[in-house]
Image (cartoon, rainbow, N blue to C red; front, side, top):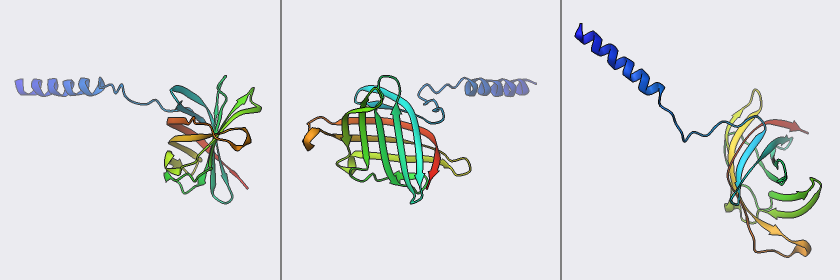
Length: 165
């Protein structure tokens, strides 16, 4: 009898321990068509748009919300889940004034300074999720360069592919 009581107590203890196991370091899932990242030292978040053209080019757009309405665009050949090389000048970021006038523009100058990963792709509903990090070089008026880099790190995204001809 004592042996059965001990087994029940042991099983109950296991259930309590596993039920109370909280993972405080877990990353909450993103809502559909959203992204979150660090832009320099600030949190940057907003909406995403994922377009797939007829030549299998994935166009990823991240548009900041609120007063930070900057736009990041990355273009790459899409082959499903995997790590992608982003070619020079195939990534672009620009800040706008009121959403229409471009006030600053940055481009990718060194492909080793960009990471773009598709972690999941559900072909039946088109859902895609992944992560990104990129360092962009500014372009000034008149083609001159400025010595300030824009670093976007710890980026995560989730969205639905839209196919365009």
